[in-house]
Length: 312
Image (tube, rainbow, N blue to C red; front, top):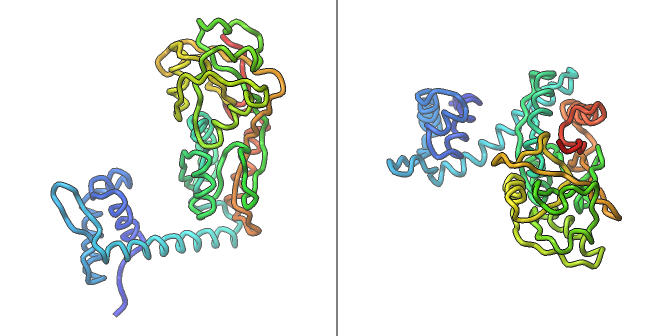
């Protein structure tokens, strides 16, 4: 007798398996808990196995059989997505799910608006966004967990393809009371005696430090953080200067203090913002359209954070 279950029931099962509870899956999917619970029960009846161990204190845990079935279920759901994509290719439609990664240093500035405009233009597309560091972007593209990523040209491996969109020269971030805050531009020698707040992310941190190495100057690193917002607050509160390539649209730190942005002059390599993807001959209509959308947003000047406006 054939099994009787739906793709939606399988989606609910995977959501519960990842969330660890029906309530959490309900919040994520915006589906009622009884509907999800009924779907799990139906799957257990159809498969003839227990998928979850129900523990009051810890919620739901996958059984050994549940782990195996969930792994295969994720494969089935991916194949179902590919069928929808194939149908779109045949009909020329732009539709389906697009997994987009974005470098964590500028994801909050660039990606939400870019995604909103694209989904408004193509309502049959849903973008799954992920904010990642450079190393994780490489890894997830290789595992096909991402379709494409917005990032910088930082040590791009040869098995991935980078399409540049815009060059971003570096600038120095300073608190408004910093002794160098009134300068029109700064050089690395100007910074050698000042404490530095290093934005310390994989590949990004090395890029910023390369400016000092090439000038034969040892930076005075006072603070390190992997969070762009924390960096801005540390700078605004007088813990040192920092260096970045993309800036928010106002001059305030997250805690409301004034920041100053001064161009970094001299022989300093700009960062190139662009799209990174696995090398593939057969791209979907949806992916091609998203690439064109990003290129148009940069060319038209609607993508925020790409220019350094005058300090207020």
